[in-house]
Image (cartoon, rainbow, N blue to C red):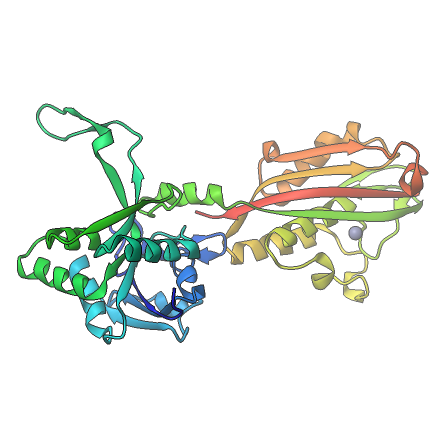
Length: 381
Ligand code: ZN
């Protein structure tokens, strides 16, 4: 395929009535990115796409806040009151240098660059006027009429975007729908209405269209991110250690610049790792006097605030404390309760385990304590 040979048109003028929120559904956030950012990135990254026209509503106040806003491939046009008018407005500014146009919905964030290549390959091989992705119908289908009859589902399939069309054929077909005042749910319909050839390729059921709030929840389940953490501190003689904000009295203490809460340090590193923010040392240097004897719950507080800024939340934590002494089991529940308070998640979302180092190495000789942890985070719906 020739590079820079394709035009993309993204329909983003939806006002989210069905989504039931003031914020149009394409601007909801998943895992630190908006739905529309995720939907448009494959087009920005594709070498085949040289121009992207995004159709927005005149009342749109969010588009300027999107990461792609100033991208040089992108041009903006205002939409009409229906999809056919919106697409028509975009095609009017396409300047004749393109043979094909790919149309897509801003509310479908789960597509890949390969999808663009697959569509192009299919339309050129099939010589159709439009090629689109479909998925089979797996649930039973009944028709809403007086008899509520079950239909033969093998005779139906579901239609998705992206779709690719011959630009001139699509222009003429959309104009025909407008002239005939025919409702046009998608571009393949316009081509079908003009009796031109269609082709289809099986798509993925993960290419969901964000329509209801629960669709975002579903998408979030695909997008859990994980971060691992590890921390180790030396012991010296003293009067106790702090683990997960809980003080355990014993004959030694942890050598550290801060309060030495090795469990919270490891979990903080996991959170920062999962959210792509770096590590604890960047934010709380052990060279900085300000952090002397620092209460480590402040580090966790800081991490949680960073997560809020990114619209992320902790989904699950698992940690293993590795030491010979003190025995963790008698304190396990109190530590767990404290962790649940600090992390603001239920105890059932926290795994807390303890093991020894079989009397081998510095941990085995009771000279140090270590913690290994993993944190899973997801976007807030
Ligand atoms: Zn530490």
